[in-house]
Amino acid sequence: MYLALKEMRRARVRFGLLAGAVGLLVYLILFQQAISTGLIDQFIGALKNQSADVLVYNAQARRNLEGSIVLPEQSAAIAEVEGVAVAAPLGEGTFTVVAGDPDADEQDAVIFGYQLGGPGEPTTLTAGRLPERTGEAVASSRNAADGFDVGDTVTVVPNAGGTATSFTVVGLAEEINYSVAPTLFTDFVGYDAARRAVNPDATDVLPSVVAVHVAEGADPAEVAEAITAAVDGTEALTRQQAVDESPGVSAVRQSFSVILLLFYLVAPLVTGLFFLIVTFQKAGALTLLRAIGAPAGLLVRSLVVQVAAVVVSGAAVAVGLFWLTTRTVIGSISVPFDLGAIGFTVGLVLVLALVTSLAAIRRVLRIEPIAATTGAGVHL
Image 1: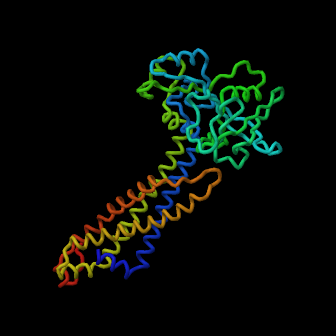
Image 2: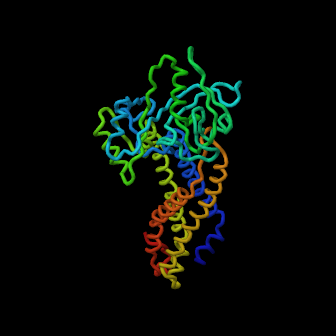
Image 3: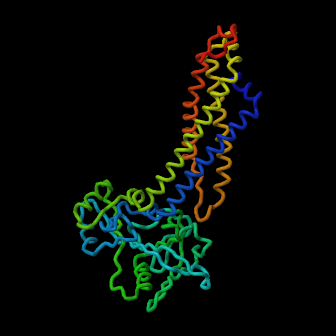
């Protein structure tokens, strides 16, 4: 330990630059991971943070909530499947609204309609309360400053012949946006009214999906399979499946995975290559240490300590920069500060750096003390 730290103090600039480079790479990994999580939450947070255990789509919708409609006879059949405790309609649609100030500009918002007290209600309430009657709604907390704060009124702009429908925001919930748009959760009657406002000729407003609470002790995955098998023309997914298999989500994850893989490769390779070069540069000194009795294990431990010190100090810089980044919102996407993800990333980078330093360790172990008498240095 003493030998490792002594060398690092004597070469502060060299090791400092390496720690800074590692810190920048770790920061980029953390930032990319957070952007990926934040972006996906903006796309499907409403599905992820609602209470239904299972969502039942029309099979022809291909797991696309926007394109799904469940027929009345299908809804009735779903409720009869073994393992289903509660089956209730859940509607979703995108509407043009005026939020907050009546003179504000029109904007798009997504409205979810669910059966009050039933499956499909938001689960991440942070302010106010859940709707208790028609005309009340919970909004996404991210859009509170855009006219969706508690007490604000959101009005659906009607088409010709339709009647304007308004909702009073009574609560805010985190991460319930859908398709990166402001989102409201209201009762299904209010959703029905919003649909009729933009389509006054509609005779029936059908749910987009059926939200299901499974019976106590039942496995949501098994109940979903039973619904799909029992009710023709439907496809049932667990909440997590609905999130993971939403259109576009897998593509976003794959794109970010490629970028993250490159960063995870570059960070340890930079560290390993640095220590391999340094080992060659100080071959004479290492050979002399071996000649005067320093065991190979001591030199290897010193190298490992230096690798760990560089990665940990670089990670500390990265976490500090990342914490500053999380204090801001990039566009409409917030960057979450997740300690679990940070710990995993730093630990993985450290392990990979130690693995790539095996080349330098191998060179240290091949040093022959007798070479000190010949000036040959490290034998390759």
